Length: 250
Image 1 (cartoon, rainbow, N blue to C red):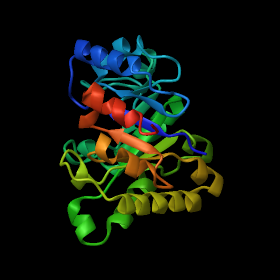
Image 2: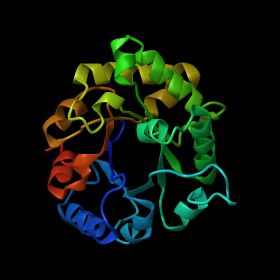
Image 3: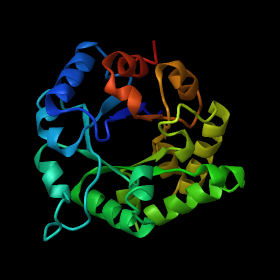
Image 4: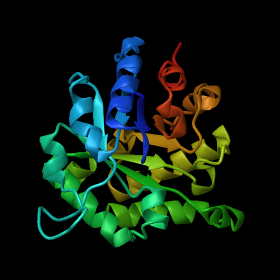
C-alpha cells in the first residue's frame, strides 16, 4: 500500500515571513501524518527558516538544483547546499523549467543523477502540451520524458524517485484532467516503469498528479488506483485550501 504524498510547490511566491506563517497555520491544523505524507517546496531563500518548523516526517523540497558540485555557476544552487539547510527532496523537470528556462531532457537527467547520488529524493515532473494531447501522442510524450529523465539510473537509485504527472495545459489554468484521463496516464507510467525496471519498483513508485489541484477535485483524483498524491501549486499558497487538500481522507 503506497502512502499518499502531497507537496505544495510555492514557485516564486511568498516572502520568508509569509511562508513561515503559512507553514505554522497548516501544521497547527492537525493533519494526520499517519494518513498522508506532506511537505513544502518554498523558494531557496526560505528553506532554512521553514525547516525550523518541521518535524522529521515532513518533506522539505527545493524547486531545483544544478548538476555540478560547485564552481563558477552564478545564480545556481547545488545539492549539497540544499542538503545543508535540511531539504530532503528536490523537484526536477517541472514544465516551467522545461518551457520557460529551456531545460533539456539531457540536463534534467544530469540533475536527477546528481540528486539521487547525494541522497535526495527526486520529484521528476513530466507532462504533455495541449498540442500533444490533441494529436493523440500524450502518452508517448510523457513516457519519452520519463525514459530520458531516468536514463542510466540504477534500480537502487530509482527507489529515490517520485514521478509527478502534470499535463502542461492544466497548470495554472483552472483546467484539470479528468480522473479517468489522469488515471490512464498514471497506469501507463507504472506499466512503463515495470518494463524499464521491475514490477516491484513499479508497485512501490509514487506517482503524483499536478495541474490545478484544489479542494474540490482532490477526493475524486485520490480515489483512482494509481494516483498516489499531488503536487499542488496555487492552492498550496493558502492555508485553508491546502489543509482541505491534505485532509482529503476525511
